[in-house]
Image (tube, rainbow, N blue to C red):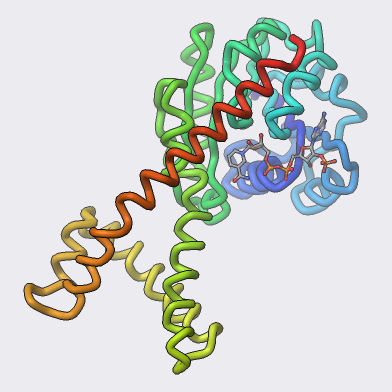
Length: 271
Ligand SMILES: NC(=O)c1ccc[n+]([C@@H]2O[C@H](COP(=O)([O-])OP(=O)(O)OC[C@H]3O[C@@H](n4cnc5c(N)ncnc54)[C@H](OP(=O)(O)O)[C@@H]3O)[C@@H](O)[C@H]2O)c1
């Protein structure tokens, strides 16, 4: 069995460890973790039974597969700290946005994969985007796709697509939640329902719509089933189709511009 190391047990790293252990993707006994704030690693260890490494270096030496779950601008400094240890017999799986496989390969000899997970893996749902470096092996592909397959639906893509697709999978839980919140608040502004009740109604409907979409497998089909011709829902759908396309075009424009900015800052960090 591969020995698994996880560096960074914040929101994502912590969730991945909990879910990998819960689903049996990796047994707790095969996982060692390390985080800059020791209490975060201790909390995950207490909840899952994994080990805590004495240092990032100890972790990297002891692990066959190293998950890098730190902030994008922390990745290069971390790789420099691990200089000489991430050898060609190891696999690095980075979940950091905007840190390219070439950035990682420039600082270590390990084989590299990138994964963009989603907070929806908390419920073993949603999509993990996966891209492999040229030097990755069939065993690497199988390990990564199987681990993320146990907590989500993995979707393999070329690295150049990761940012755009991440808006649809990894950022989307925030986009969908804030959009649905605005929907609820719009009803609240009519002063006939409390914010709590409006949120509850929209959340339950969102959960029901997600289930329905799983069975009919088509957005358009759900729209057609509710928005009967000449009816009231159709009027609302017309407003959405008029207003929302440009909102999403704007949204993708600003998020992609932000990715470029972060990539520039990563590029400016010394290799
Ligand atoms: N959140 C998401 O939905 C999401 C989705 C896809 C991908 N990602 C990617 O996942 C990565 C982590 O995101 P997050 O939301 O989990 O951030 P986070 O909650 O801030 O977690 C990052 C963790 O890494 C630790 N850390 C930073 N530098 C370290 C180092 N040199 N050695 C050991 N630990 C270190 C931090 O320690 P401290 O606690 O001391 O700061 C923190 O606990 C990011 O690169 C992000 O792009 C996030």
